[in-house]
Image (cartoon, rainbow, N blue to C red; front, side, top):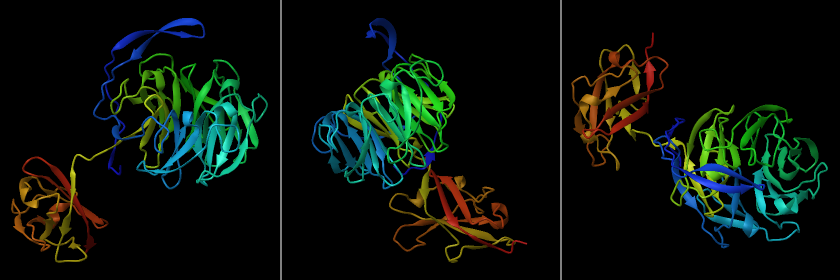
Length: 443
C-alpha cells in the first residue's frame, strides 16, 4: 500500500433510483435508494478485503468499527461475537478477547473502539451502557458508566473518539448528547439535548476528532453532520435526507484523515462520502452489491497513518480497504550521473557534457528507450548527439544506455542536490530517474 501519488479529484456518478417504501416511527416515508454509482477514475482504489461470516479467528459477525495502534495493528469490534479482534496490518490474526456478559472484559453488543497515545484500547459496550479500557494485549484496565442520564452514565452509547491529549469523547446516543472524559473515565463536560437545532441531537451515532481539535458527529436520524470545538461549541453543520451529493440516509461511522478531510459511512445509501473540514463535498464511492468496492451496510470507517481507508460492512461481515494514493503514471528507474565520478561532481562553468546512464534492471530494459524523448535537468536538456549508445556500464550482463547532455543547457543550479532524467520507451511507457549531484564552481 506504499504508493506515490495522492489525488483528491471528485468523480461523476450515475444513479438508478428505486422507490422504496419503509416505515419509520409509525409514519410512511418515500425515499430513493442509490443502486448504481459508477466509479470514476480518481475515486479511492480497492486494495484488500478481510473476513467472512463466522466466529473463528479472523471471521466476523457484525464488525462495527476499526481502530489502529502505533504499530499499525488493527483492532475490530466484532459485535455479535461479543469480542475484539486484533490483526496485523496485513490482516493476519494476532489475538482476541471478550465474551458475552456483563463482567470485566465481557460485552453485550460492543460497537465503538478507539486507541490512545499509549496504545490503550477503549471499547463502547453498548447494552452494558459503559466504556471498558484494555491494554494492547486485551488485559482489562478499568471501566466506567452505568444505565442512566447523570454525568458519566449512558443509555446505549455508540461512537467513541480520543483527542491529542487522550481525552475521551463518547456519543451517549439515547441521551442525545456527547460526554467528555479524561483517560481514567473522570467526567469533564457534556453537550447536547434532544432536538434538531444547532448543537442538539436526535440519536447521534458516530464521532471523530481531527488534529486541530474539531469534533464531528454523525446523526443517523437527522441525516446530518455537526462540527464542534473540543468544548462543545457549535461551528457548522451539513447534510439533509436524500441520495445526492452531501445528502445522507442513516450515516453511521465518521472519520478524518491527516489533512482534516471528513469521511462518512452513508450506510443506507451504500456509499462513502468525503468532505472538506467545512462540509464541502469532495467525492463519493460505493453502491449496493457484493463485489469489491460495493456495500450492503457500510457501518464503521477509519483511516490509518498511511491514509488507507478501512470500511466495515456489518451485513457482509468483512472489512474493505481502499487507498487514495494512486500508482504513478510513470516508472521509476535507476540512473547514474557521471558513472566514473563517485561524487557526481558537476562543474557549472564547464562547456562540456554530463554523461548520464540509464541502467537496465529486472523490470526495465534501457535499450528500448526512445532517445528523442529523453530530457535532463530543470531545463529539460536534450541528448547532445541526438541519440545515446549502449554499453554494459555496471558490468552485470545487461546493456545500459548512455546519454550526454551539455552542462550549460541543463539548468542545474548551484544549490541543486539532485538531477532528474525523464523520457519514454518506444512503446510509450513514461519513466523518471533521479541521482544525487555535487555542484562546484558556482561563482
